[in-house]
Length: 164
Image (tube, one colour):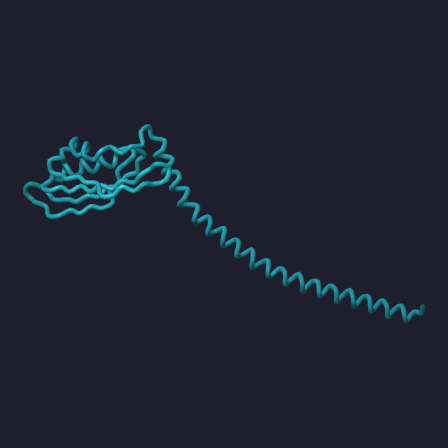
Protein backbone atom coordinates (compact mmCIF):
# COMPACT_ATOMS: atom_id res chain seq x y z
CA UNK A 1 0.00 0.00 0.00
CA UNK A 2 1.38 3.32 -0.95
CA UNK A 3 1.73 6.33 1.27
CA UNK A 4 -0.84 8.32 -0.70
CA UNK A 5 -3.37 5.54 -0.45
CA UNK A 6 -2.80 5.34 3.31
CA UNK A 7 -3.28 9.10 3.69
CA UNK A 8 -6.51 8.93 1.67
CA UNK A 9 -7.80 6.13 3.91
CA UNK A 10 -6.82 8.02 7.06
CA UNK A 11 -8.57 11.16 5.75
CA UNK A 12 -11.66 9.10 4.89
CA UNK A 13 -11.67 7.49 8.35
CA UNK A 14 -11.18 10.90 10.00
CA UNK A 15 -14.04 12.42 7.97
CA UNK A 16 -16.28 9.44 8.71
CA UNK A 17 -15.47 9.72 12.44
CA UNK A 18 -16.21 13.47 12.35
CA UNK A 19 -19.50 12.88 10.52
CA UNK A 20 -20.47 10.15 13.02
CA UNK A 21 -19.70 12.55 15.91
CA UNK A 22 -21.84 15.30 14.37
CA UNK A 23 -24.76 12.90 13.78
CA UNK A 24 -24.55 11.51 17.32
CA UNK A 25 -24.34 15.04 18.77
CA UNK A 26 -27.43 16.15 16.80
CA UNK A 27 -29.31 13.02 17.90
CA UNK A 28 -28.33 13.60 21.52
CA UNK A 29 -29.43 17.26 21.32
CA UNK A 30 -32.78 16.23 19.84
CA UNK A 31 -33.35 13.66 22.61
CA UNK A 32 -32.28 16.21 25.24
CA UNK A 33 -34.87 18.78 24.15
CA UNK A 34 -37.64 16.15 24.13
CA UNK A 35 -36.55 14.84 27.54
CA UNK A 36 -36.22 18.37 28.93
CA UNK A 37 -39.81 19.19 27.94
CA UNK A 38 -41.00 15.94 29.50
CA UNK A 39 -39.10 16.66 32.73
CA UNK A 40 -40.64 20.16 32.89
CA UNK A 41 -44.10 18.66 32.36
CA UNK A 42 -43.54 16.09 35.13
CA UNK A 43 -42.23 18.76 37.50
CA UNK A 44 -45.43 20.73 36.84
CA UNK A 45 -47.45 17.62 37.74
CA UNK A 46 -45.47 17.22 40.95
CA UNK A 47 -46.11 20.87 41.91
CA UNK A 48 -49.83 20.37 41.29
CA UNK A 49 -49.86 17.20 43.39
CA UNK A 50 -48.08 18.97 46.25
CA UNK A 51 -50.68 21.76 46.17
CA UNK A 52 -53.47 19.17 46.20
CA UNK A 53 -51.86 17.28 49.07
CA UNK A 54 -51.71 20.26 51.45
CA UNK A 55 -55.49 20.63 51.96
CA UNK A 56 -55.81 16.86 52.29
CA UNK A 57 -53.18 16.86 55.03
CA UNK A 58 -54.94 19.74 56.82
CA UNK A 59 -58.26 17.89 56.63
CA UNK A 60 -56.67 14.68 57.88
CA UNK A 61 -55.04 16.44 60.84
CA UNK A 62 -58.39 18.08 61.72
CA UNK A 63 -60.10 14.69 61.51
CA UNK A 64 -57.36 13.13 63.65
CA UNK A 65 -57.89 15.86 66.26
CA UNK A 66 -61.64 15.18 66.42
CA UNK A 67 -61.26 11.39 66.47
CA UNK A 68 -58.90 11.63 69.46
CA UNK A 69 -61.59 13.29 71.56
CA UNK A 70 -62.96 11.06 74.31
CA UNK A 71 -66.51 11.61 73.05
CA UNK A 72 -66.79 12.80 69.41
CA UNK A 73 -70.46 13.85 69.80
CA UNK A 74 -71.67 17.42 69.63
CA UNK A 75 -73.12 18.97 72.75
CA UNK A 76 -76.78 19.85 72.24
CA UNK A 77 -77.35 23.52 71.44
CA UNK A 78 -80.59 23.29 73.43
CA UNK A 79 -78.53 22.46 76.55
CA UNK A 80 -76.11 25.29 75.82
CA UNK A 81 -79.02 27.69 75.34
CA UNK A 82 -80.47 26.62 78.69
CA UNK A 83 -77.10 27.06 80.43
CA UNK A 84 -76.44 30.49 78.91
CA UNK A 85 -80.00 31.75 79.47
CA UNK A 86 -80.80 31.99 75.75
CA UNK A 87 -83.42 29.21 75.81
CA UNK A 88 -86.39 31.48 76.54
CA UNK A 89 -85.47 33.74 73.61
CA UNK A 90 -84.39 31.14 71.06
CA UNK A 91 -85.95 28.67 68.65
CA UNK A 92 -83.54 25.92 67.63
CA UNK A 93 -84.09 23.70 64.60
CA UNK A 94 -81.95 21.30 62.62
CA UNK A 95 -81.74 22.29 58.94
CA UNK A 96 -79.41 19.65 57.48
CA UNK A 97 -77.93 16.32 58.45
CA UNK A 98 -75.36 15.08 55.94
CA UNK A 99 -73.92 11.56 56.24
CA UNK A 100 -70.16 11.43 55.74
CA UNK A 101 -67.71 8.52 55.28
CA UNK A 102 -66.74 6.27 58.21
CA UNK A 103 -69.98 6.91 60.13
CA UNK A 104 -69.44 10.67 60.54
CA UNK A 105 -72.17 13.20 59.96
CA UNK A 106 -72.28 16.95 59.44
CA UNK A 107 -75.08 18.65 61.33
CA UNK A 108 -76.37 22.14 60.52
CA UNK A 109 -78.59 23.89 63.06
CA UNK A 110 -80.27 27.27 62.90
CA UNK A 111 -80.93 29.28 66.05
CA UNK A 112 -83.44 32.14 65.81
CA UNK A 113 -83.59 34.49 68.77
CA UNK A 114 -85.74 37.57 69.41
CA UNK A 115 -85.30 40.19 72.11
CA UNK A 116 -82.11 38.57 73.31
CA UNK A 117 -79.59 40.62 75.21
CA UNK A 118 -76.14 41.11 73.71
CA UNK A 119 -74.54 39.58 76.79
CA UNK A 120 -76.62 36.40 76.67
CA UNK A 121 -76.04 36.09 72.92
CA UNK A 122 -72.27 36.48 73.23
CA UNK A 123 -72.16 33.96 76.12
CA UNK A 124 -74.13 31.46 74.03
CA UNK A 125 -71.79 31.91 71.04
CA UNK A 126 -68.70 31.54 73.23
CA UNK A 127 -70.02 28.35 74.83
CA UNK A 128 -70.99 26.82 71.47
CA UNK A 129 -67.58 27.40 69.93
CA UNK A 130 -65.64 26.30 73.02
CA UNK A 131 -67.12 22.78 73.02
CA UNK A 132 -65.07 19.78 71.89
CA UNK A 133 -65.94 18.96 69.13
CA UNK A 134 -66.83 22.60 68.48
CA UNK A 135 -69.87 24.09 66.88
CA UNK A 136 -68.73 26.43 64.13
CA UNK A 137 -70.71 29.60 63.45
CA UNK A 138 -71.10 29.79 59.67
CA UNK A 139 -73.69 32.55 59.37
CA UNK A 140 -74.88 35.30 61.67
CA UNK A 141 -77.69 37.77 60.92
CA UNK A 142 -78.24 40.46 63.56
CA UNK A 143 -81.25 42.74 63.25
CA UNK A 144 -82.34 45.91 64.95
CA UNK A 145 -81.05 46.61 68.39
CA UNK A 146 -83.15 48.21 71.09
CA UNK A 147 -80.75 50.78 72.55
CA UNK A 148 -82.45 50.96 75.93
CA UNK A 149 -82.71 47.27 76.71
CA UNK A 150 -79.61 46.38 74.69
CA UNK A 151 -81.39 43.52 72.96
CA UNK A 152 -81.56 42.37 69.37
CA UNK A 153 -82.89 39.68 67.09
CA UNK A 154 -80.46 37.17 65.62
CA UNK A 155 -80.41 34.19 63.31
CA UNK A 156 -77.35 32.02 63.80
CA UNK A 157 -76.35 29.03 61.70
CA UNK A 158 -73.99 26.49 63.24
CA UNK A 159 -72.22 23.50 61.73
CA UNK A 160 -70.61 20.62 63.52
CA UNK A 161 -69.10 17.18 62.86
CA UNK A 162 -69.95 14.21 65.01
CA UNK A 163 -69.76 10.45 65.04
CA UNK A 164 -72.88 9.15 66.80
